[in-house]
Length: 490
Image (cartoon, rainbow, N blue to C red):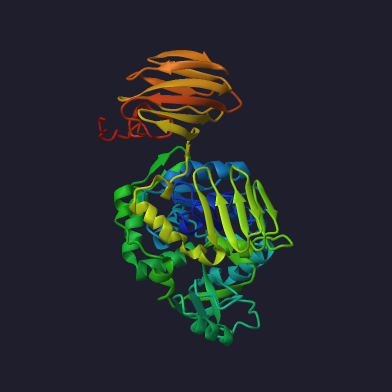
């Protein structure tokens, strides 16, 4: 279904790195791409798409993400059977106002003026039916030109959220959006308690509903430099497989500004609609514990976990067995390269730990041991002086680029599946328990022609083993124009 003037186009924003959910959420694979809410395997992005089903006039989504995450987004949408209208790639992050401007310009490019439902990909909403009901309540106001934002009905005097004050009390549960009086930044506890006593305040969720033309008009009036930069980035965009790549220079010149600051705090067309649907922005491990289903002892257990005589803990294993014995109020998260142990009350302070790691140049601050690529993934198993071992997984039908290395040779041992290996223009089949050797300077490529993943152990040796020692000659994923960086010689 394509967008029309009566369509409802979801705009799913996939920005953000979720630092406070480190070590699971990192820049290379942020929280929106992990299964965090509930006990199922669906990620936060997939849940965001799924809860839309049943909305009237629903059109394919516009998804906006960092270009480094494009294949993660495409694969997770494919797993749902969802076909976005476009996956727009941001070369750099510029906050929500530019992202919404790009979406509105794209949605109106064919001359239509649909409603845009702007959602973050990393929120938890436990009651999807209540969420859809609220959207339907907001549609008439949005069709009439109002800029509707969804205000979360507060459950406590929370100091970690911004607040929205309505022009009238909301206790009665209005059946239509109410004009906004003001936005308030994160208050102290006493102020937050006073807010709750008035019945006028909701938490600022960052979710919106408006006509594409209405938000564009207000952006043109209140933040014209944002629209100008975004229009230029779209006019000079380029298609990349299933993606729409925004022009880097134009988009990088766009102001870095939130939609709240650029428009909603200044417009006279803003309205707030209360939403009580079990919402959370999953801003910390303690917040995730609070929104998750817990056992009789108050524990949230995920993965290979055993808990005995433990209470009120969040225990999560991605790989190895985690045992909680006689502990209370802890967050324990195990990943392939990090184990986090923190008191739940200290979970908000993880961001400072990540900043310390970044300052030290630690790889763990930004990336997992397993790195995802458009063709599959690789996992650093072990390394030594002038050598390292990786496990490589190549998806069915996928192919690495035709490439060569200046400073390393490689031994490949296939342990599952059958690979086609090209070396200096000559192809050979390498099956399970067979191996091949890639000399330094050899032009080579590995492809998976089969229906099951190829799993391979790669042993690299040489004076320099960095990932930037790759010269690409052909690449089906749009990376062939990448210029190799200067490579240090050991």
